[in-house]
Amino acid sequence: MSRPEKETMTVRHHILITGASSGIGAALAAYYARPGVLLTLWGRNEERLENTASIARKKGAAVETLCIDLTQADKALAALIKADDECPVDILILSAGMADIRPHNALAESAETALRMSMVNFATPVAMATEMANRMAERRRGRIALMGSVASFHDLPLATVYSGSKAGIGRFSTALRAAMDPYNVRVCLIAPGFIDTPMSQRLDGEQAFLVPVDKAARKIARSINAGRAVLVFPWVFQLTRLLEMLLPRPIAHRILRRLDVMQHPEG
Ligand SMILES: NC(=O)c1ccc[n+]([C@@H]2O[C@H](COP(=O)([O-])OP(=O)(O)OC[C@H]3O[C@@H](n4cnc5c(N)ncnc54)[C@H](OP(=O)(O)O)[C@@H]3O)[C@@H](O)[C@H]2O)c1
Image (cartoon, rainbow, N blue to C red; front, side):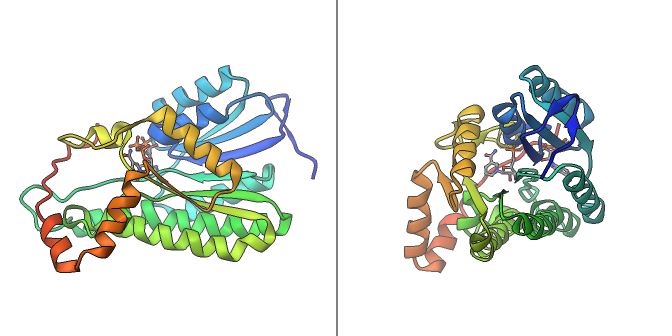
């Protein structure tokens, strides 16, 4: 398939990244930026998104940006279809996500937070991934990366919606992987522990085995490029997952109820 010229450059790879205005998405944009690459970068905050775009342009990539709120799934789908029609997407990285811990004096998150988080962390990325999987399968090539979390391995009383939405993404991702493998479309689930980004910096207290964001981006990109099904890192979280599977659930819950983490509001 011939590709259009973007910003006077011939595009060899088109990579679309959501959540590119911050953290892991921004670091992945910087990682992939080079001549011959078109980066379509999505985020909400225009200034931060432009900052990522300018770093990528300096490294020789062609860049298009879109400020979009992923609670609006219809708009996101329409924008995805437009971007793919203009230049077929080779790699779709669905990094955008929100984390919320229940307020200190509450028993659970609010219904409003639950709805928003379900859209941003689950419903919209699932809709985008299925649309793109169908398109990539026709072309018999492509990569889709979905951002899960090690939080999905545990029944977290402080973050029921976050751990639930990430568990949903995890199962969706491996199921879509099974559906798409025969069509040379590789679906990758990324399940990180603590990565040093604005999201983790909002949490009070020590974050075990914190990984610098650039190191995490390299690891994630290598996994996507290799077409790996699941990346869980740091490896120690494989052990905590196993431990929770082995423990009787009431005992695990008693331990997990003791977790006391505070989260600062979004800046
Ligand atoms: N950091 C960690 O320790 C960690 C661990 C496990 C999994 N993860 C997952 O990794 C992904 C990236 O997180 P991060 O650490 O890079 O966090 P981050 O620095 O807070 O970045 C989150 C990104 O998601 C975007 N986003 C949030 N709500 C959105 C919405 N309603 N519509 C559109 N975009 C929205 C943000 O856009 P704006 O900034 O423009 O608002 C930002 O670009 C998330 O899915 C997160 O759950 C992170």
